[in-house]
Image: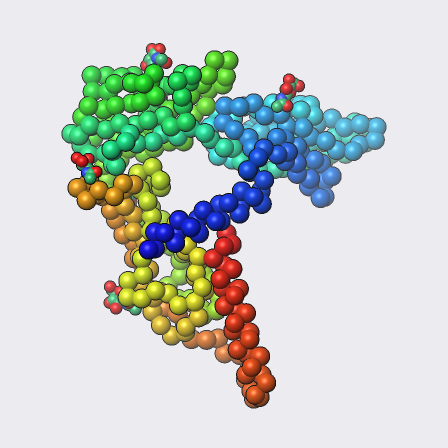
Length: 336
Ligand SMILES: *[C@@H]1O[C@H](CO)[C@@H](O)[C@H](O)[C@H]1NC(C)=O
Ligand SMILES: *[C@@H]1O[C@H](CO)[C@@H](O)[C@H](O)[C@H]1NC(C)=O
Ligand SMILES: *[C@@H]1O[C@H](CO)[C@@H](O)[C@H](O)[C@H]1NC(C)=O
Ligand SMILES: *[C@@H]1O[C@H](CO)[C@@H](O)[C@H](O)[C@H]1NC(C)=O
Ligand SMILES: *[C@@H]1O[C@H](CO)[C@@H](O)[C@H](O)[C@H]1NC(C)=O
């Protein structure tokens, strides 16, 4: 039941975010720094392996020259062409406009998010690596037209007697895993006349997962607290997260979105148990790997406000307010 709830909230919030940020269709992003009057514009989304044109503009009389700074490199001119290699999910891009006559300069910085269409995924039927067992990794997002190569810990991987490249190199198959196969795997994909992009990576590891829950041990009633499930497995590739509430479902309003649990308790002076359960992607009793993080949170007493005699009409107002608080509480389910 928890799983379904989590899925729905997540999907709703993702759709909401997509709709609000315009990610559903490509759009033109431009950001203006209010103080500098510099505008940096580019076509959104920026994608790994795909060239993006960035334009910097400002109003200088008679004219401006422009200097960009991207990853410690400096480029002159109002336009910057950049092909992200997929190794970063976001970068800071800085443009400085210099007035050619007065020499005055102004600088603006934007954070550019990079989408990566490629990721290392587990072959079907594989849930986690086991020593002496076969294992398969797939370069997800690559198709037959892509040229695929594999990297382990940043080094190009050369197949040996225990590894095999299949499906035009998009599949990396280990006949029998050894502890030395542990490491961080990425693939690269490129099409004819296209640029090489590194995929999102996968940590192949035989160690047990570690799970913990971040957040305070004591919380105030009627105020929102955020708890985060910290794990060292790759979510959605080799593990899934769910929250359990042993000994009772939390009172108040809550929102669960993957790793993040936001809670506004209503009932003071109580203890609430939080459990974050991490399991292998597929539900298969014979091939299950799981770990749990646990935390007990104490809800403190109501904060003391200056008291005043409560008249009959105030009591009515108070209960209306509580209803409103409840409605607001429900809304929290759908915010970020
Ligand atoms: C980027 O600029 C180059 C050179 O000005 C142009 O040929 C290309 O079509 C531009 N690309 C996009 C996506 O605007
Ligand atoms: C697969 O990778 C090998 C090197 O590991 C390379 O020689 C070969 O050309 C690649 N094949 C394809 C179809 O990309
Ligand atoms: C997770 O972290 C724990 C504790 O730091 C470590 O012992 C374990 O090897 C890690 N597991 C993975 C899969 O990285
Ligand atoms: C929370 O968990 C602890 C340890 O498992 C248990 O002793 C306690 O009764 C639980 N508290 C509640 C409120 O469920
Ligand atoms: C569960 O996993 C094991 C080992 O990977 C496999 O042999 C078995 O067929 C799987 N069972 C189901 C029901 O998927």
